[in-house]
Image (cartoon, rainbow, N blue to C red; front, top):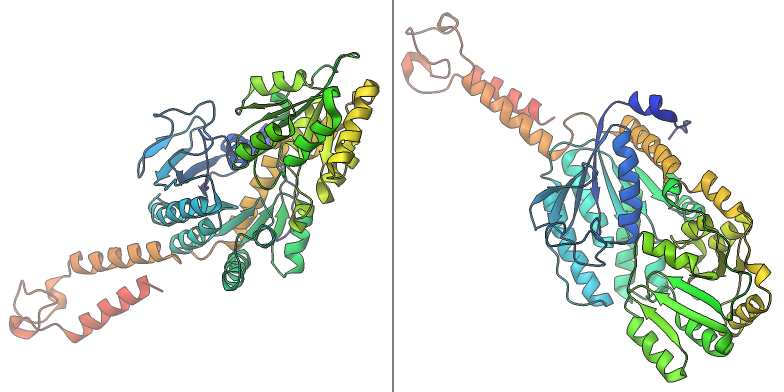
Length: 481
């Protein structure tokens, strides 16, 4: 793909021709999740740049956000209009528990339904699928091929590497899943990653047309907070986000236990590991506050009451070297000290932004950092460099401009010939047959009695004229070419 400089400004946006995008996602508004936050922000800007957006996603059922209700969650096989003017097509789900097997079954059901619903959403210019729902990748490939439009695969996690690290698949199934994911990546017209590291990995595998569009934030809606107080009896530490296997939050609970009364740890959010974390805190006798998910203004109020915010990923999964927690950019922008239990590209971003302390995953190292911060609170002060880094690298107002240009380049350079999809071919065939059956022909062009049908044989015997029969076959055959 030929790189181009994306247009900027209102005039450039208004000059763009209208295009139609179909997004397949495993989670969308009114749920509160990484794909929802990313695409709700992107859609708002793409709509301003003349995109008509349709979304195929399950009925909201996992991680309800602040707008969640019986009305906003939608109904299976029904269409609803989102707050941004996008058309949301809901499909069924199967929720049997917040564990690996349950999530996989849920994704399989929703992906199968998405393949059917996606083919029936009208005409689009491009299909975009956002992973890590692996079954949804196959559904998107089917939809794109049926519609005859280019496919854009967005890899928000390092799949299939992450599947191996997490032992999601084992034995022979591991090879099968790997081949399936790689096959879709290779067949995509464009692959979008959220980190430079994973983009590099895909290029080394031979995947063509790979670009990076980071996660980010809407900077204009993200306040810059005043510094924490110079004096405070305890160091207030906050983790806000998913409580799952990827975060390994037990290290924070153990570190809080080692730090003793000097540290007050608060964990806000939900996830499969939360019950085990509560049990660990009870066993250790450490006072950790566990709070449910919070949103919008409550999040910023929580940040303001905090001294240090934790960004955390487990360090024994190699794929996380190419992963950046999505909250990283928000925390950089608000101006709070960061306890960064990360490595790889996430650590590189924080170092480049000049904010936070990067620490190892050993609870003793984490506890030592917290005790040092409690003893010298001047280390908590930030210098504004994090917000400036976000302004130049992770503001969705700019990221959407780049995404818009990548999508338009893909539509222009990789769209198949008009009518190449199965549905357009079938529609053209039916239209051609109807025309051949309905088109009147002058009686003088056909020998025999006046009023005889051109398809009737000599003397009105009802036998078809060979020449007309062959012409009809050529017309039908041409429709499918």
